[in-house]
Image (cartoon, rainbow, N blue to C red; front, side, top):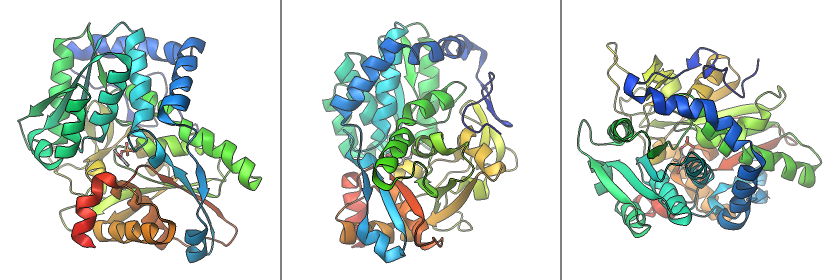
Length: 392
Ligand SMILES: *Cc1c(COP(=O)(O)O)cnc(C)c1O
């Protein structure tokens, strides 16, 4: 089976597609018919790769974490996405999509954001490339994530509160989609994860695939092996995991592990573990696993990490789950906190709370002494200091 890319209708197995209101169809169709030709062109790649290298700071290191390896009696490498400009993997996608928008002749960018990380990455790319930037954000999230709101404003973005529904991420997505319908010719919608109607999941996965491309090259250089035994990544919508899995997903000897946010526990009613709790449904334009009631109302998720606090997972991962190509773990808030404190104390790296969910898998799974285990450290923990201090 080819797990890597969707078919021409945007399906990974039974998941994906483009379920959008008719008024949005022209925008989505324009993207579907143009995205591959543009992003695979030599001139696009030249500009994109130059920015990744000289602006974002890629390649990010692949670091053999000796102390962590000793603790778990195996070989653990950390892929340091936390060292990217703006502090996480999201900038890889934001810059790619803003460059794409320019080539489509769009000079106005909209985005949704929950915790604000994707909003900051998009506002950064827009400041760099000279495009207008509007970020939709739930009113409650605006209050919870004040530092990122300040960053976006300083970067020149306009932050518009979403005041409907639960006033959080899914409401911000709805507002952004409404904006896109009203401004089809001038505007590109930069979606922040491997979610949304086709071609967004594939588009975002391709921009994030730089992560596994570098892992392959760096691992070969450092260990003599191109492929690790395991790749572990956290999954919110699934973009850092899709990027970390991408060049391994069709290689059967590489085991893939995804860490979802268990919140207070899968059975607690306060969780975001979609593969454990979700059923097949349509969320934000694609068929995927969704946390929903029997009559299709989206259930409010909970996670201590804002970046994993999402009631679905994208179609790429829904398919890996269904086909048993990846193993899924649910990591609770307290387990993620413990792993974050441990990494900080023994390696001197403060991880994002999201990334700490991936690290917590090390306590759940047994590895052989000479296994090569790569953990995607999706972001840094500066943004989470307030939460960490409460639990010190
Ligand atoms: C947003 C975010 C995530 C979750 O998003 P994915 O699309 O699942 O990668 C994970 N880690 C960090 C640091 C984030 O900012």
